[in-house]
Amino acid sequence: MSLRFASLGSGSKGNATVIQWSGGTLLVDCGFSAKEAVSRLQRLGIDAADLTAILVTHEHGDHIKGVAPLARRFNLPVHMTAGTYHSTTFKNKMGELPDLHLIEGYQSFRFENLQVYPVAVPHDAREPCQFIFQLHELRLGILTDLGCVSHHVETQFNDCDGLLVEANHDAMMLASGVYPPSLKQRVGGPWGHLNNSQTALFLDAVDLPRLQHLVIAHISQKNNTLELVQQALAEIVDQVKSVTWACQEQGFEWLELQP
Image (cartoon, rainbow, N blue to C red; front, side, top):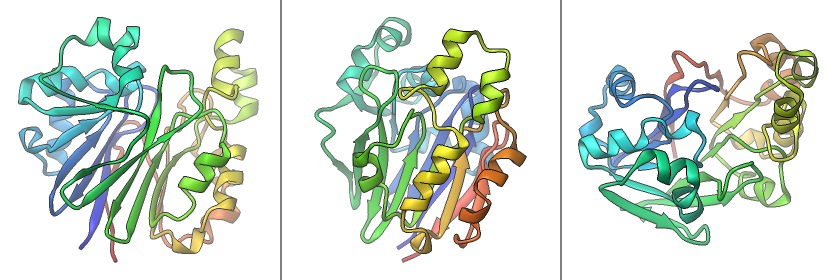
């Protein structure tokens, strides 16, 4: 039984990842308007009304913009941590949800035969999480929006068959870029986003030969370039069967994991 994943777009202007298996289709985050999300889902051959649920990692706008409108329009269940739901950003701006499921204490939950493991990450949100999806022996990890790799994160994401991980910024580009000092400190700090070197160090510690697909995502358009990411990860990607570089406009097409 296979497990596949794709992206509607990845970057500071909007993020959304689609997970699909024989039992259903999940949308992880929706940082696009509902109209745009519907259009991008159709590009992947998916009708938004057929989504099983939406999972939310945290309350930042590039991850939640379309969550509530899409959920209300198609009466979709939404899963998120209590902290995310009760954050000022979400509760005050997003409104009510038709079918809310709160993730308490990062406890795992299931959609038929797909097990979902929420993983706590260091990020400047109220109760952020990332996710690992397990279908029988297949494991898919989605890991963006964290300022450093904790021992817990490294342990949880070590043995994946598919892995989407951010390489958000180049440290030198961020330091010399146009962001104000406070934003530079936030993005580059331990509760911000991973830079290229941090991502390389993290990947050096995981089981690379096991990976069927590695996706590098959430690449900043202002503080990074594809060339710099590829340089930083050159030695890593040579050890992986398939490497995909996600982009803001196109995301990436379906990647399939096989038993």
